[in-house]
Image 1 (cartoon, protein in one colour):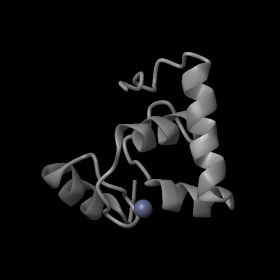
Image 2: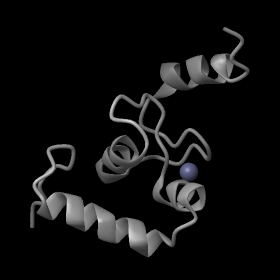
Image 3: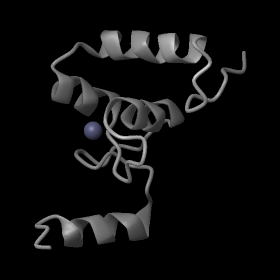
Length: 83
Ligand SMILES: [Zn+2]
């Protein structure tokens, strides 16, 4: 399998899995959960909110709203908010 991103992916895995695979921004647990929910439950590469927003051509606020909805539905991917 000729994956042009294979090398990059390995380098990233060595550093940390919890950075955006597009812009290398450090990810929040919610962003990882949202990537799983919107793209693939078994995703191994994650996107930050702004890259997800660009990918789905949605405003970031719409994605924040989705996070709130998934959490309200009791989705296990989203850790409960401690407030
Ligand atoms: Zn990003």
